[in-house]
Length: 163
Image (cartoon, rainbow, N blue to C red):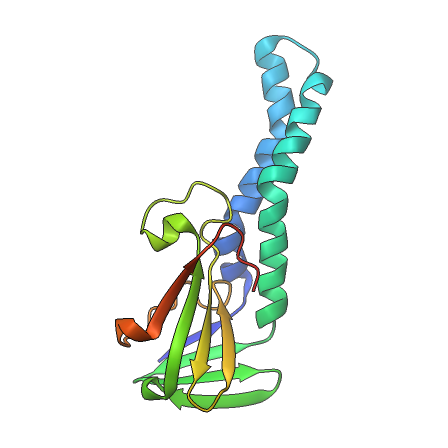
């Protein structure tokens, strides 16, 4: 039985690029100022641009994924998935799944190393045959690889994946 829920470990697993990006943005002006023997203030604008372009989109995606799956629990055991969302519990078999839409970055979909800090974030939308729908983010389940047929899995590639 595999039990998934959002905890500190899942935040750190997904958010390590955020922490690294913030550290780089903070230390960049001082390191470059030391190397170039210039005033660190002259490099602060470059650091701000690096934060806005590289770190801020990752923070927005992380917060969005947290808000979507806050308090959710996903349990997978012997082909049965149980999702507890907002106090309601739903269980279904793999055969009950109509289709799964996997929203991934171009690099993650091609099984390549990610370039951007937000490349590892992905989410899946599970559509059941009874018209129910569940959003599972990588903050809850790191990589939703269910043993179902490939023709029921649709991969959608994009740069920013807001759930």
